[in-house]
Image (cartoon, rainbow, N blue to C red; front, side, top):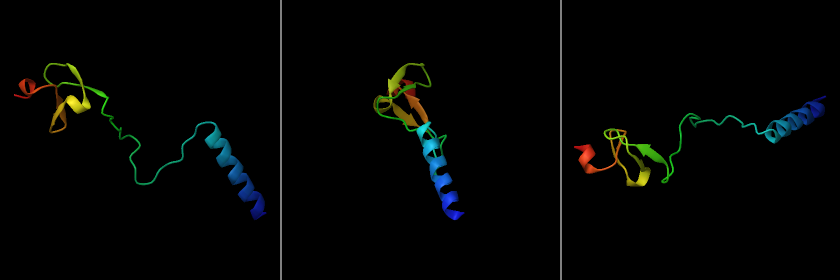
Length: 70
């Protein structure tokens, strides 16, 4: 009886993963997005798009240059 239950659980898990399912992760927020260096963000002041590595971040807001920051 226990062996059948284990086999069905493993088969169910394999089918779930085969169809692209993701198992829930503990300790991570799934809504949190990871921003790469090449991700474009919009400047708060002039609405110009710049990459993350070229932007200036102040209090969680992105700016394209020091002129827009002032």
